Every structure is written in C-alpha cells, then in structure tokens.
Length: 277
Ligand code: HXC
Image (cartoon, rainbow, N blue to C red; front, side, top):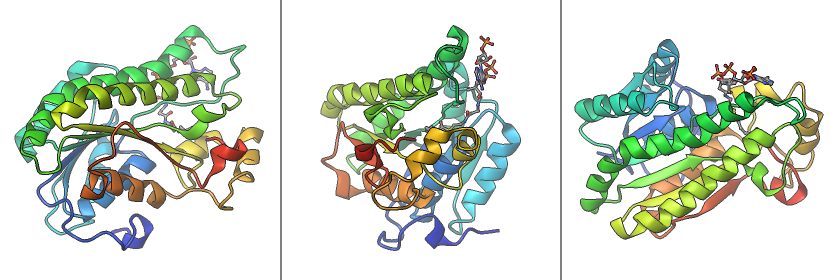
C-alpha cells in the first residue's frame, strides 16, 4: 500500500526535482533511510537500496517504488557494508541497471545498549565496523561514479552520511555508538575538503530521537536515559522520519549547492539540553 506523501516529505518540494538522478543507499531497508529514499524517489530519482537481508531489501524497494509512477527502485540483499567486495558488486548492479549514481546515502548502522564496563572489544569493533568502516567502504565503492556525475555539472556528486546527535553531549550505554558516529562525522568533514575541488560535497545528517523507527523501538524500552531525553527536546516532540527526509532533500537539492562539510543536526534542538539519541 502506498504511504501518503505527507508522512514522508514536505509539500514545499517541487515534483521532478531529482528527475534523472540516481541515489545509492546503504541501510535502505531501515525506517530512516527508506524514508529518505522514498522522498527522493517521489521527487523524481531512481534508487538502489542495499542491505543484509534480501527479502527485506526487495520488499522495501517495491514499497518505495510506489512513491512515483514509473520509478525504478532496486533492492539488493546480501550486502554487508563491512565487506567492500559486496558493495562493489551492488554498485556494479546499480550502474548496470540504472546507468549512474549521483547521490549516496551512507546510513547502515549497528546499535545496542551496553555499559562500557561489560562491552567486549569485539562488540565495540562490531559497531565501529558497521558504522565507520561501512561508511568508508561505501565511499570507496561509489566514488568513481560520483566523480563522473559531478563532472557533468548537474548537481550530482553528493554524499550524505547518517550520524547521530549524541556525539555533542554523550549518552549512557552508547560509548561504542558515540565513538563510531563521531568518526563518521570526521570522515565526512575530511572528505569535504579533499573532494570539494572535484565538485563533490560531503555532509552529515545527525538525527536526534526519531519516533516510529526500528532503532528507537530497539533502544528505548530498556533505557531510562532515552526516556529522559525525550522530555528534553525544546520543540516538545520526537523527530519523525519526514524531518530527516526533508533535511536529505535539502542537502541533495540545488538549495544546498554551497553546503559542504556540514553536520546538520536534526533533533528539535535536543542536543543543546542533553537530549541525545
Ligand atoms: C552487548 C552485544 C550485544 C548487546 C551484540 N553484542 N549484541 N554486546 N550487548 N546487546 C556483542 C556480541 O556479544 C559480540 O561480542 C559482538 O557484539 C558482535 O556480535 P554479533 O552478533 O556477532 O555481531 P553481528 O551479527 O555482526 O551483529 C551486529 C550488531 C547487531 C550491531 C551487534 O546488533 C546488528 O546487526 N543489529 C542490526 C542493525 C541495527 O542494530 N540497527 C539499529 C540501527 S539504529 P563477543 O565479545 O561476544 O564476541 C541506530 C540508531 C542510532 O543506529 C541512533 C542512536 C540511538
């Protein structure tokens, strides 16, 4: 069933904004990234989402494709961002089917609540590998195509990483995730400097607590800290996937042509009061 547009993207964006653009997204089966991709597809893009679970990736791709008649959305499973070879293979399929890649969303993430006193080195490494190494691998696999897109000078060649606002304040039971997400911000910031001269931009969206997502469902019940943080959001509500989708549309649109090396915190101001996600 098609999801009503108002649930995933604002009316302020014009249809056809991303006509002929192709977005490649890791973590695209998840709640936040699928909403980001759905918004871009609604506004004219074709897309390729990748994930570990093939059934989930294919079903999500089909669902996203309902956002626009004629949209082409590939769902590729058995892709683990920790292994660059599986990303190279997915990128090759994407380019073979959709001809190009203009935008990349690096959103695959791993998370669980754990106190650092009992967090094993392997558990820490698992999250670093998914979030940070996975983001690096995504860049390595897609960069040649973004260089080609940016050379056409039509607004392509853009990376958006999905981080979290917690790096600003810290959050209990999340040392591993805070470290990984901070490093993702640093990766993007440095890429912005190095790739800017090629016409490629690199930015981060750092969400706060986002309601109705698998991530929050997974993390909130056991966490007093997360419950407390929800009361610390100046705008008085949890974020929605639409809030993140709108920020994504902005960063890929011509309105953000001069935005590079930014970490766009989308959390209702929560980080300023210690409300992390
Ligand atoms: C402590 C844990 C643990 C837990 C796993 N480990 N879960 N330690 N508490 N709840 C430890 C294991 O014991 C093991 O260490 C190590 O982590 C690796 O575990 P595996 O299960 O072998 O890893 P893997 O199968 O690769 O799974 C990766 C995962 C898993 C991150 C651990 O949770 C996962 O794949 N999750 C799905 C994706 C996900 O989490 N999405 C949520 C994104 S939401 P030992 O020492 O025993 O070998 C999000 C929002 C962020 O990111 C915003 C902030 C809130």
